[in-house]
Image (cartoon, rainbow, N blue to C red):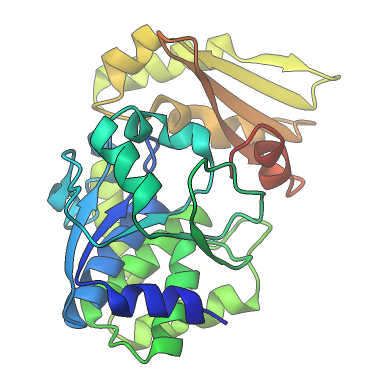
Length: 294
């Protein structure tokens, strides 16, 4: 099923793993898992993200190995957790990175079944799944690559993050089977959750800001759509402590009658990004309409 992906990786010696400019637990955990798996397979792996890993994700051990300098000497790029061009804008603004992606092999490993909007040639390793880490697990098993304890832990971190602890509507029996297999390989839910909770602690400033965000929530379509807008000034002020979207999205989704919750961030260049939570399982469909995945 993943012959092309395995062949590309096998042929490469030096690999750069790329996250989009909105890193999350799945993209980070998947990157770290690839670092472990491919490192054990004899590859030299660099993890890259065009933005700094936000503090709320730093419970994931190894986050500090993700660099912001694009290594254009790699043989292969692996993009994880997105095939949306709009989420790679910062990468494509770097001339050397743009040239690399235009001229070198690129593999995209993703679980969002939305049409790719990438403007350069690439090979897709795509499967409908709760998290990208599930696709990585399947590739590793098919290729007979070793999944060590650290890799298993990172894949479970990714799985739990994107599924909100295996509670989202797209969770299937396969999701639980994967969690069990990763646990057998040494991953620990209790350790992951303990570390996550420690980093979930909020400063008084962040708690006050959360109250401000809640007061800004607007409701549309007879209360079925909840929207909060997060301006650039807020992103600058608070993102190094906590992702503003994450502060309120789940609570917005739990308001009576709300079916879809959206947090919209605005940037100085006029770009907008949206983070979605839905009670109807339509987040990926909505995100795909706007050229993203969710």
